[in-house]
Structure formats: structure tokens, C-alpha cells
Image 1 (spheres, rainbow, N blue to C red):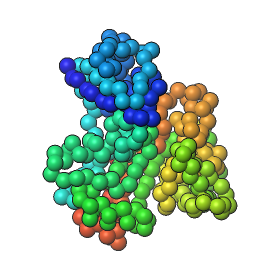
Image 2 (image 1 turned 90 degrees about the horizontal axis):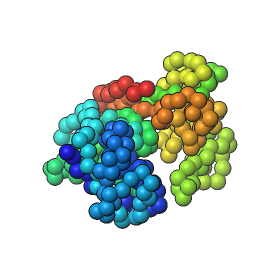
Image 3 (image 1 turned 45 degrees about the vertical axis):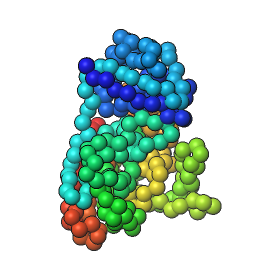
Length: 283
């Protein structure tokens, strides 16, 4: 029997216990969480709790289950960098809601031999390739490469409908509202707006279309907001997309994955120069 313990974050107070469990242990199978709740194998501050329980910030939650957690696949590792295939539902780094994060996993993987650093971030709901550095200097080099657009990031996604052109590069401006944790896209420059460039190519057309997407700029929620702005929101995106369409398709979860990460010769990242890493989209 496995025993997992977590502390509820300050922003997660008042939410349903089931939601907190999934946030705390996103690598546990969904059926394991449901089973633990049904059997009341969940303790909140030492007291058995069920599905109707709501948690408070600072609560200690303990879950007992016979099921183990999913592994985070390591795609590549050397003395400088670590490339993993992040599952959907895992935060890149900790936030005020608490719960499990990729950086927490990386620190456990390091076993005290180094202090891992994120070189970029993926949305919680997105899956795919993520680069971490094993020291501050290598982390700085990689972040500069991302900022300078020296690395090539390719995504796959499923969207509502089919764009009118087989491929293209979209240009717009993005405004970020950090307080609301969302962004807005406009076709013309605006105060506090930053330019975004998003390339796409149709892989499979239909009522639901599979796109290959290339990021030329890396803004918060750029792909999700930009594709929604042109009328082709990503399947499973309830924040920027079409909730009714998502429900009708019956495919829960954001259909967005970082499937390719390439390091051109001019990237400045010595140990990875000339290499390209690819993983299949999980949808």
C-alpha cells in the first residue's frame, strides 16, 4: 500500500477534495483517486474524508492506495541538461495552489547531486518535451537561447474546424492579465501588448483538425489564445475555446503537446548542438 502526503496551498482553500487530490498527485491514475475516495482511504488532518469534503489552506491530506504513480519519461540526459516528456496535468513549477510539479520531480531525481532549473515552461494542461538544466550557468544559456528564438519548438494540437490555408504564419499582439491568469489577443498593437508569431501547418483536416504548430515567440498561453482568436480553438480548452464543442466531442483534456525540440548549430548549447528530440502526441 502506498501512502502519499500533501499540504493544501493557500489559493486552493475551499475547493473540493477530489480536485485537490488530482492537483496533488496528477501522476496517479484517475481510477485510483476515485477508488480512494469511495473507500474513504483519504485523511484530512487525520480524519477520514469523502467526496463531499472541502479543504482549507494548510490542511494535511494523506491518501492510501495500492496503485503507484506514473513515471515521467526521461528523453535525454547528460551532465548539463535533462529533457523529459511532461504529462498533462503536471505544473512546470510550484504555485500558490500547491500540488506536484515538474521541478519537484526533478529535485527528487537529482538526489542532491545538483539543483535543477527550468529552462522554459509548458502549461499545466499541455504535455510534451521540457528542458531542464543541471546548474545555473547552463540554465542561463538555455533561457537566452529560448528568448533569442534560437531553438525550434514544434507542437501538435487538435482544433475545431479547418483553417482556410494549408499553412501560414499568424501575427498578432497579446495582452497578459496576470491577476486573472489569462491573456487576450488583438490584431493591432495596443498598450502593454507584445507581438506574437505562430506558424501552423495542417496535418489532417476535418471537423476536428490536427495541426503542427511552430512557436516563433513564446508568450503565456500563446498557442491556445492565438488559435482561438482566428476561430479554431484547441479541443479541450475550456478557457479560450468552445465548451459546448468540447463536450460534444467527448474527449476530455487539452489536446496540445510539445512534440519536437531542436537545437540548431547556432543555438549556443554545446552538448545539444545539431540535435532534435521528438515524441508522439498522446492523442
